[in-house]
Image (cartoon, rainbow, N blue to C red; front, side, top):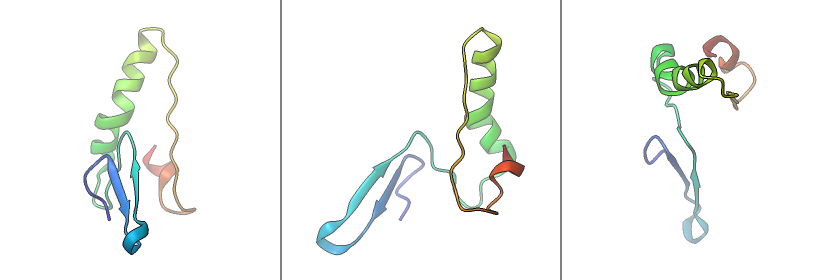
Amino acid sequence: QVEDHTKIVLDRGADSKNFTFDYVAGIDSTQEEIFLRIAQPIADSCLQGYNGTIFAYGQTGSGKTFTI
C-alpha cells in the first residue's frame, strides 16, 4: 500500500514493513509530473556544476526508459 509519495507499507499482519523513498510515483503519474518533481531539479543542479544521477527502478517493460 502506498501511504503517500514517500512511503510504502508492506502489510503482512504482525510483520508489516515500512519503506521510505525520496519519491514514489503512482500509476497515474504523468511524464510532466515526473520531470518537474525529479528531473528538473537535478538538471538545474547540473547546469550549476554539480553531478546528477537519476536511477529508475521497476519491472521490465513498465516504461522507465520512455518516461526518463
